[in-house]
Amino acid sequence: MLRLLGAPLLLGGVVWWAGPQAIWAALRGADGRWLVAGLLCAIAGNVSAALRWGELARWLGHAVSARWSVAVYFQAAAINALLPGAVVGGDLFRAWQLQRRGCPRAAAGLSVVLDRLSGLWILFALAALGLFGGLDTPEMQRLRVLLHLPDACATGWLATALLVTVLALPLGVLLALATLAGRGARPGSRRVTAVELLQRPGGLNQYLWQAAASLLVQLFTVCAVICAARAFGILLPAWLIVVTTAPILLLASMPVTFGGWGTREAAAVAGWSFFGVAPALAVAAAAAYGAYALLQAPLALWLRPETGQVREPDGMPR
Image (cartoon, rainbow, N blue to C red; front, side):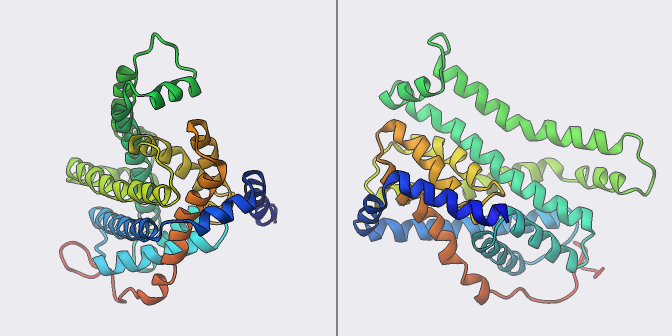
């Protein structure tokens, strides 16, 4: 109940603070060409993400077709956009659908968790990489002030350290998970099964494949945000939008609202107003990005995953 009341209250508070009339004026003056371009980027990003998840499921030993993974992924995206809980509901739906096809519960859940972490991982890696595009710019100086960075800390070295840390983090996490899961586990237990999944053959190739696929997904995502911003005349440098997209979308994924409404707009205002963007324009651009998910929701009704048994990579049904 608190979530049901908090979501509209949060969004209403952001709209009231930014000015409803100013937001309406921004929406009326939006450039439709940029909005359409952003929607196409958002759709391409979801298709790429669906194919990435399908490949991950196949690596975990449960073959699914590209058609099935795309259909289920868009259905999950519709749940995320229309129901409370942000990405939680859609992720649970994906795991449930995979389990219905014969995939064990632990493996189905692991596929969704790893898929979600893969996306966040590369999104923040892309943000770290974007810092290099703003070296010695006025916007970078403002960003340093915002983050209270001392003058002795060189931006280039900080960006390099952040990028290396983000790229190496998944290996450390997977190693820790395997160690903790295997410590004291009895043969045949679920924890041993999790270790076996994490140690499947081709792990390094899958790691690199997931990195490349997630990079494509997040490039489409960032392009969608840039298009939404340009539609309302927000002329922030592309590198700065790349950097700020990571925290904006992270807050939007928190399970406290419907489809990220409210948290996404508040984060956009907080992140962009420091660089001279009017709050009404920031709210309008963030809302346009949120609308992309709503506009894709009807695709879930059109897409229908095929039925049938799940098959192992050798072609034999389970």
